[in-house]
Picture 1 (spheres, rainbow, N blue to C red):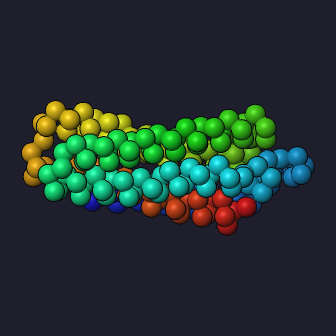
Picture 2 (tube, helix red, strand yellow; picture 1 turned 30 degrees about the vertical axis):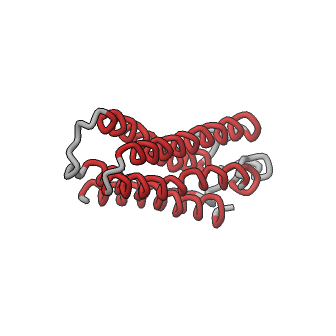
Length: 180
């Protein structure tokens, strides 16, 4: 719980920074030529990515439910689906960034929007990556039946994963809905 609270503090700081600098203007720059949320961010891909990520909260729930009922194979299948959905989210984020860089010339050094956008979304993607790697390790351990049924590690991993999903709802709403 202490770790998740520290993560809330981290993301609160990043979100606040994004909000503060969202309307920041660069002296001497032509705003029509600079990438902004309104002229750079699209909703199509990010909605698909969001569906992948938010669906993974359901699949990890089903995984834990299967584990609790002693359905080992079903648990591993649901955990693998969760890993796949998280990986698809990361691939989609990478594809979005590629388009932002090549089509809109938005990089972390372009303007404060670029700096705060890539920092906020990047830290979230990093956390998703940690979750995917952790679940892969957990899957490998569980496939070998090395954890007892009483072990709380899968439950704790699910808490982290639900946290990452919940943070995405806040980020998506701020960056892609309100901030545009």
